[in-house]
Length: 394
Figure 1 (cartoon, rainbow, N blue to C red):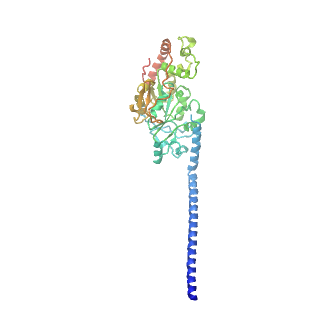
Figure 2 (cartoon, one colour; figure 1 turned 135 degrees about the horizontal axis):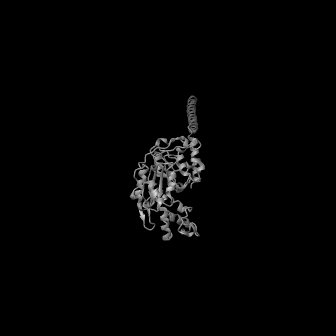
Figure 3 (cartoon, one colour; figure 1 turned 180 degrees about the horizontal axis):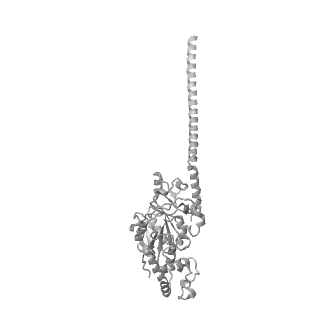
């Protein structure tokens, strides 16, 4: 009996020992598995970081975030075929950037600082889809400039052409070539919108047309820049210019008192801005010193209002774009006397341009208007000869 008891005790001890060993092995395996897993994750993270650092992607992305903060703080011929200038002398090393044209896609360097656009920069469904497909938005200097003329319909032109999916434009007037040129092309580029391959970058500042230094500066940036010029009957344009200024200054003198010297209709005051701007031929001569006439498209401000689809069709042809923006995008607002949009890049509902568009002009004496028409007539005829277009202004 003692022997049987001993054997039973030995069997129980053996079972307990085996169970303890199994438990120890399980605990050891679990601990080591967690340790190995944690070590693996740590190594992966460090390897990934080293990969980013070694490929300069880490520093590039940080540079883009910083550039984005800077941009947010600062927010404020007819065949259309051309290539961007490859003249490295046009741009200093400090401001070295990639110029591009609509049909010269290989000039875009997607590995540059601007090429890796952060996903937060454009949340539109179109750009989310493009990112999923591997497209990388980047900033570029403009291919096309709307250079003027003030109070002729430049804002309308910009809003209308932005309906095209292949056009991306700076929303505000950047005034780089006339006010901020000393800040350099790098600063200018960071005020441009993000684009993808095949899209046109555009900017509008109407004062470019009348500023003496601008033609040379634009040529220095890119000798192949395409230029859009909206022109309008200079008398009506001057009155519209005056109306805008008077809306901001209650005690402004009458139009007639400002447009003529000594209150007499005999002498037109050509030093007064609203009158001076309307002498289009003088400004055009400066632009033609640096650009071929085929690089400029002249848009009738009157026809842009009466038949926007026609003028926008001409613009699309000039830029080498498919005619996407057509009559279906516009409707005429009889109250404002101005074309409005069924939808735009920013809004999917019908709307007109801002309250400042389509202001009612003050009454101007007929004698003053007639005298101004006589004054402008020889300059208008010269402008018709230079452009090859008769705008039929009175």
